[in-house]
Image (cartoon, rainbow, N blue to C red; front, side, top):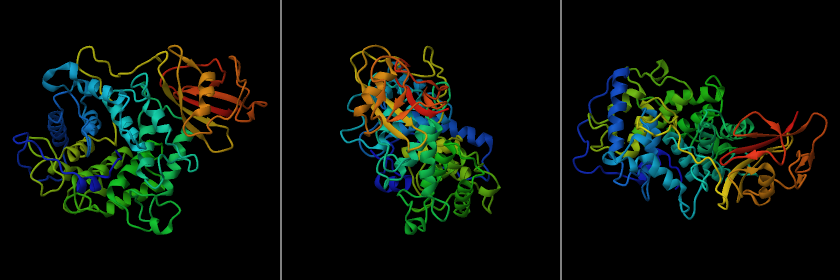
Length: 470
């Protein structure tokens, strides 16, 4: 299913809490939430999210908004998905169940869209599942690469659905390797940064739809939700908080601050929009309780969020007038209060025997697998694609990857390679030949680039980046 902004999602989906479950009256807001209040909010918020786990251990729901976003909030609050179990049954821990769901051949649906994979990447990462190594047949990063728009570099999925590009940037820049390094080349990240910048409205914010190149669209008012997400994507991609685009976004949000500490969103004051805005500020290292975001009555956006939380139940209501908590609002509220952007590094599980990361390390001979491939000839636009190959062993070679790239998605990633057989040095790719100090080099998962040879070993889940230059 596509990602929805909280305001639109809330108008389409109403979630009722089962009778008697963690529902008590909400308390009034306090000015500038204290560390103790934030700690309590995180603790009770985690308790509420744990109550949403199904008896089979799952958080993924059919139709509407999936509760799998809970993984991003749980990680932000310091709780490992592997430690979340129904009734203490560790064989149904949330990480294991979610990983099996992601690895299933039928996931996410018969007609997937880019945002399905972006959602999966962000939440798998937060759950402690390497999104490129979910299973021998599931590489979420490669699945996303298939949605690269060759005619509009930097966009993922139809460019009119701009949030697909925002969350694509959040996913690729935010889901680091197990070692904490960036997997994708910065040039790939920068292409999406450029696309997001081009869609910033005149008022400093963004909204759900593409505006780039359309003066009328750029002059329209922005919404709180996508402004938070877009600024978070830029900062995740390496844009500093001092950049004019981030300053303009901050000023847009500042101008929407209400006396209650909430932001006046398109559909009124609500937890989801407020949560996305705070997550955007968090991602950029901007204090959501600083002077710029303290109202004349001394209230901050974090203060508002905590006021939206039921005490001691831990769930957050969507609207101030609601009398029951919303799972979706509870995720957005907790993640923001916990200080996170739109994902968080997975905490180390406390359950004995559970590793920090769950990942498949080897190809399975005879089982089709996907890899992300990025080709940069230094002159033309990047070529990005998902390569499907069927390995014959536990590893494969760069030569086999390039040979399989002839039928990659999108097409045109690799049109020719020299030599076409053997294991020797790659002397030409797509018509660009080695010359002088300029040669083809390969980097795997962001590691230091080395001379590209057909015999270079490639492992399951590697992001394969080829670059021509000195």
